[in-house]
Length: 156
Image (cartoon, rainbow, N blue to C red; front, side):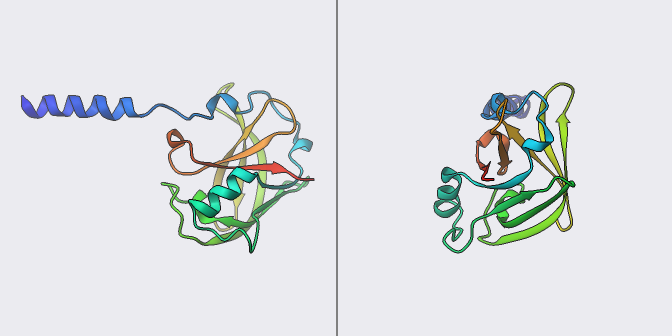
């Protein structure tokens, strides 16, 4: 009986701790024009600060870039490794990759995201934020409920 009670209490505490993705309401709900995705994207200032202070990345040597091309190709240059870690942990290394991208709707009438098919890192999903241009690209770091993310803005 005591074990059953302990399991119930533990379950309640576990599920009550999951408060949900704090960015969910800012994800893009209307289909964006693909042309608004084309260009070079770089981290916003808060992301650069977080990369340096919390992630331990040397942002003085290189700045991450996404180059989104009209022909469906994408290049990820000097990306911090923590976006690939399931817990958002930094190994203080950067990686580059390339592949293809496409707009995809998450679930039935939910939000829009970029579906990436990368040579080395396989299939990945990143969210779009904003309801009209300029959009931002949102890379969740680890558990979405934690609210850790990298935000990229189009620079050209």
